[in-house]
Length: 285
Image (cartoon, rainbow, N blue to C red; front, top):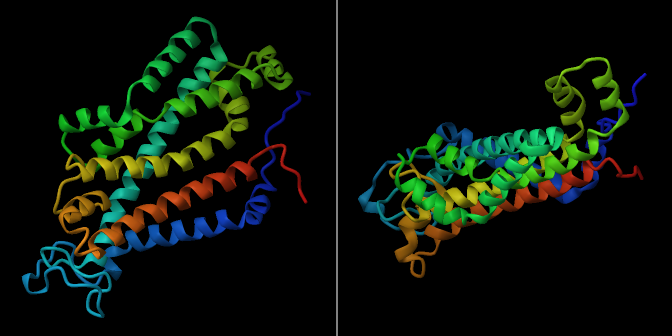
């Protein structure tokens, strides 16, 4: 009988619950995501409704977060903008993490020339400044949700690839992998059934942290006018629209900026909690 050392799952939630900041962050992120997804149901106005009689009004009972320079309700636009920013962040993180896991597992498992080529490719990708390259690519593509997610995802796989490669290099020497190989299991089955389940911890943590990085990158592109274009709101282009009035009308930047800060902090704390919870050496106390 082969020895298998899959990371035990039953204690993961118990360990995560002890990380109170991660649990709180998970609740905040879930609440914000649900609120943004339900924006058509809970938003008090349409995101593109213009009211020139209510231009740049401060927060009030009619407009809880105030209005922008076209009289549009800021709370509504923050909710609708979150739908775009969070969706791009999640899609980009899934794409980047999946690509990194694939490259890292292939490099670590097969080794040799393939590993050298894939790791040199990873080193080259690491050496390229991400934001300038994103700006160049975004200027040549149609600024839509899918294209933004693809661009950011294809430029954010390198860390996951290195982490997964290191884990696979260690795991492929384990007894249960040798046993599976000895009974004729194919490379795909060994990687998919015996190796990747043991690397799920670093992959999940990497994906969680990648969401925050992707949201920051999308917001940066939108702030520079290269992301999803108005009138579709994102937190980044809301900041771009308000940059001329930051000092005199602070609510135009405070609320979308705080939304970015809150989501990025939440996903990073969730990542920290998952890293502890999925650690196979973690002790139950």
